[in-house]
Length: 257
Image: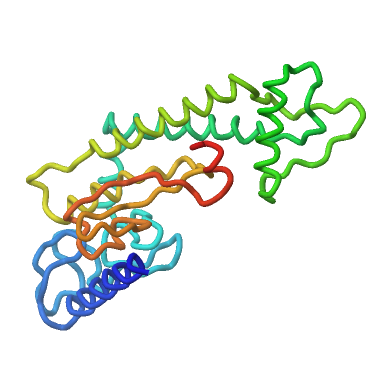
């Protein structure tokens, strides 16, 4: 409830500030920070419309360079920030780690095969491990494996069991820890403008890899709230960090032990 209250305060403050800036009086461009005259509909510096940009992906009207709902780049400023992020060795390493984690997750999930597919030739430890993971995943509808014929059952793909499975889980945890360290190490220049800092963080969301055991959230420095995007925060220029948190499903329970 406390987290929800802070989130509502954030959204209210952002909405109020947007309405005030969108009045007929002069002000600053919410996209680049340049001064806007009273009668200007577009920023003379970056060309962004004073009334905001409609996101082509989700339809949200945003007055920042990245969509406040889905983080889609909305103008040349955002696209340049993404280009710079892609050229950052630390960010490239973070994307690589996320991809490796996704592959390990796939292998771990494949360990949850039906008991009918267990080979009696496996040693007792391996059979118990595979059975335990099959039980844990049995209640997750999206991960259910179709029943195999009772005669000559054939597991689908490579199935990890026993020590090999545990090694994959340990590797996942190690990569997750390195990923968090790598993300936390990426900071904008101290001389960057508030708008540049905001775009720096928005551009460093890992959007190319989907993991089912964890979800990515932005924890702001403003009050420690969790957001889907930095632009949801009323003061994203104050900084924060992307984190990966456990999904409340048996998948996360299995991987993080």
